[in-house]
Length: 318
Image (cartoon, rainbow, N blue to C red):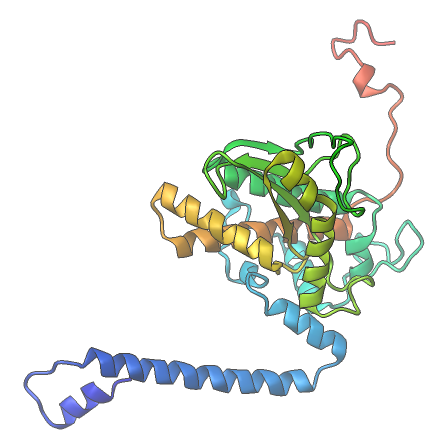
């Protein structure tokens, strides 16, 4: 890269003007050489890992999966972790054994309370918490550039005269996660439905990462795509993001388009905008996963008097 300057110094030139084309070509060559070297090193490391470790490394190599490690711990942005959360986050990252401090080795459902079970157990409502966190963040980001942003919008009923594929959800009261207008095209409505699969879950373990994402996207599309297109006259996007931070193709495309709109509206660089969005979503995933590790999963606490029926002025309380 510095060859032109070195030659100028060696030849004692009094005037130096670098050839930009030569410089660009030299930098390109250096970059390609480094990439080839690191790729070869990565392949050598992967060859010595088990199948489970190889899958974990592939998950960690996805775009946005490791962004939390290079983030400043800004409390106002929600990017701060305490000591226990940071240790747990590293255990999640490398699939290590979790500390048993304030945590039972056996789940209340009777199964071994390892990392994979913690992230897939339905007791405690933490799967819903993780899903709703992503839903609310997307709605918040879209509210700055779209109109009529709504969470959990109801779909129009399906008329008997309309024929839809057998896999379509035609039930009355069906809802999707987020809707907004003027996202893909002016005034048109766009529907988004979130899914947060765990790549190491038993149902996903036999699939490649690409197959896993395609499977979850196709299942969402088969359930809602035709109904949204034919009945709502709108667009449908399945937003599939894994617990490790990787995104399916349509989710990635959606986030890039949203970043373009936000960066244009705010007058900020696209690269800064898309990085912030990935960082925000990654921390939402990370924190909800950390909550599920040590969160309470026992039976619900039932007060003597239901709060919904209580008069807080304590006058008409039964």
